[in-house]
Amino acid sequence: MEAQIKILTEKKLVGKHTTMSFLENQTFQLWSGFMPRKKEIKNTVNNNLYSLEVFPVGYFDNFDAGRNFQKWAAVEVKNFPVIPKEMETLIIPTGIYAVFLHKGPASDAHKTYHSIFAEWLPNSEYTVDDRPHFAVMDEKYKKDDPTSEEEIWIPIKNRP
Image (cartoon, rainbow, N blue to C red):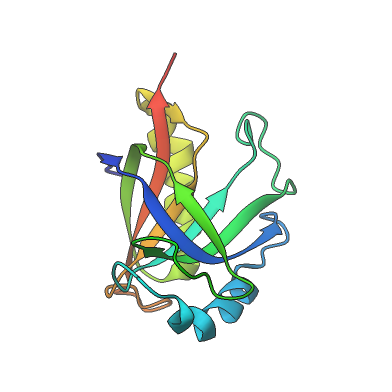
C-alpha cells in the first residue's frame, strides 16, 4: 500500500448527508437521492464526485462499527451563491492527507480501507486527524467495474 502525502487546500462542497454507522450503511440510499439532483448545483469546479465521512472527535480511538457519523454525497463548488433546496454546504479545511488509489470495483473498497487502517497507518509516522475523510470519483470511477479507480483521502497529522 503506497500513499502520497498531499496538502489539501480548502474545498467548498455542496451536497446531501445522512447520519449512519458502518453496521447500518445507507450509502446507496444517500447517493440515489443525490445523483438525480446533482445538476441543480451551480458553480461546480469539475465533474468529480465526493463521498465524505465526518466522524465525531476521537471516533477511531475506540472503534465501534455501530457508532454514528455523517456520510456526504457532494460536488466541489467555487462558492455558495445559491444552494438547492434540501442540500447543504460543507467546507473541508486545509490540511495534510494521505492519498491512496483504490483500483477495482467499489464493492472491494473495504479491502483498501482495511489495508490503510490496519497496515499503512500503524506503520507510518502519522495518526488520523479530526477532519473529513473522503473519496474522489472522477471519470475513471466506474462503480463495480474491475477497472474502476478512485482516490481515498485520509486526514493525517504527525504522531505526538
